Image (cartoon, rainbow, N blue to C red; front, side):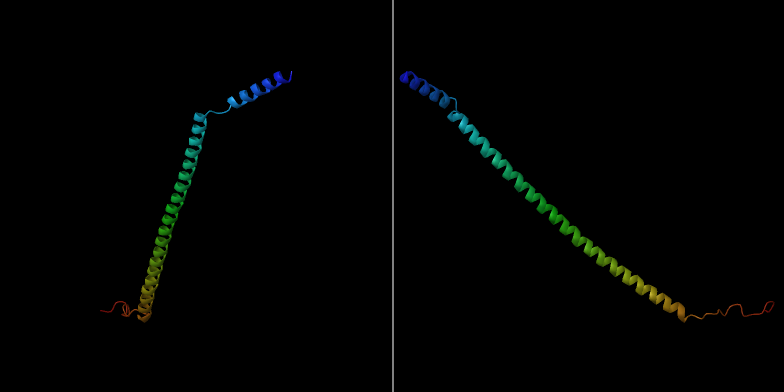
Length: 107
């Protein structure tokens, strides 16, 4: 009985060992893991490049906005300076016009 039990247990062990993946299946699995790892690394690198490109575009936009704001401030200052010159000229002009001092009916 012991011999039969030993033979059956050895046969079961061989059956379980034979049901595992073959060398070809193991190689395919290893290749799949390498491919998925490479794809994940490529995706991360693409995302990093995309973020860097967006940051550069934002930096350029910010510097353009700063330049436009400075240009607008210069324009406002020039307009204020021009307006002050016009008001100074109008203040020196006579308040009462000299035309119309003639009496009606006089030639």
